[in-house]
Amino acid sequence: MNVQLNNITVQKVKSSKINEVDFSNLAFGSVFSDHMLECTYKNGVWETPKVVPYQPITLDPSSKIFHYGQSIFEGMKAYKDEEGSVWLFRPLENQKRLNISAKRMAIPELPEEYFIDGLTTLLQVDKEWIPQNPGSSLYIRPFIFASGNGFHASPADEYKFIIATAPSGAYFSGKVKVLIEEKYSRSANGGVGYAKAGGNYAGQFYPTQLAKVKGYQQVIWTDDNTHEYIEEAGAMNIFIRINDTLLTGPTSDRILDGITRKSILEIAADEGIKTEVRKISVTEVVKAAKDGSLKEMFGAGTAAVVSPISGFGYQDTDYELPELENSYSTLLKKRITDIQYNRAEDKFGWRHKVL
Ligand SMILES: *Cc1c(COP(=O)(O)O)cnc(C)c1O
Image (tube, rainbow, N blue to C red; front, top):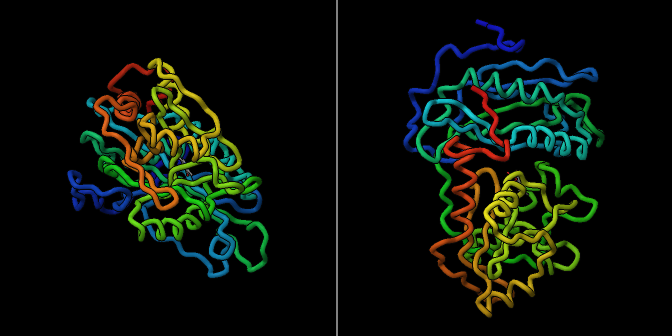
């Protein structure tokens, strides 16, 4: 049966899968909610989105996504507070970034209201799927791919925008040991590193596999030209604390403009922590590790919020980071998640109520 919600047609599942899900034991992004949002681009326009049952997609073998990787995505979360209200964190930033990625990959930009109204409607329909246990959230994956056909290497004439959601437990990555990369690159000047484009991540898998064989969980990306400047930690932005100053690299063609990164910079400043956005050389970090002024390193991104690094490898030497009682990473993670889960005042105006 179809119903209309916010001018969006909703086709509900015949029977929900929700009772099959163990909400106290959720892995990250592996169980999917009953519904998804679907929107088609055809004949030069994005059609009105629809909410439909979560289901497989049928595509022609010549669809351009398979051959030329024309695809982009976003990652965000919905948080349920103690009263059961549902919140998003800076969702317009995701909407804008999706279109920045779209433009770079020659994908037609999606109207803002389709993203926001579509997501709101989807969350209304699948409200029961948003977990409430501490640290849990509904991970939201909006994505666009080229569904149009043909082996010609050119942009497709048809696309699909889909939002799929996955109830997810608290993301405990544990402390990770990382390898500073000296050969491979994630991104380059003039490239697509600033876009959340599918192929960027496939290109990281092989260097990361090599690092894992050597006993590291993640790669620290350095600039493609000299491998002398630290850029990102896997698919997260990176922060480095030397003495009491918190450093992160400037966003560019090569460093993705993370929403967690820019929120952390503002919260840190609000806490009176000195921050510097500038190029960070490997030489500087190695020197700081040797003289004891290197206090913390952590990745920052939506999934884990902050992911502390226990040590790093560089040129066949391992460097350990100290165990701190009052780390910036713990403090900043608490401040940001308190805002996300509506446990603290939101002086920055980042929280967006959906339900
Ligand atoms: C998504 C992503 C981030 C983090 O962005 P958030 O908006 O904080 O989730 C950082 N680096 C890369 C390469 C990413 O893809």
